[in-house]
Image (cartoon, rainbow, N blue to C red; front, top):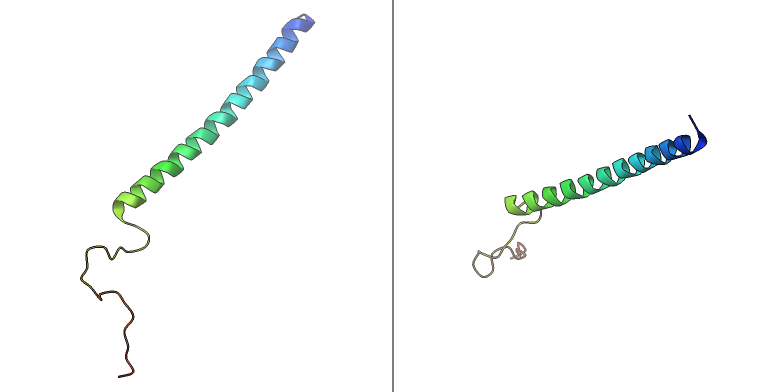
Length: 64
């Protein structure tokens, strides 16, 4: 095997490793975005008081 063939083989291997790293990073970002979207659709997180009447959800004064 001549020197150029060995160099090109090593460069191809490095390129493959870099492509795998980029692919893994993009896939993780996509999964995080999908998780966030699903949690938003399910209403996870802080509860919303958008559809309740006035005064509901406020502080309750129990000293009276």
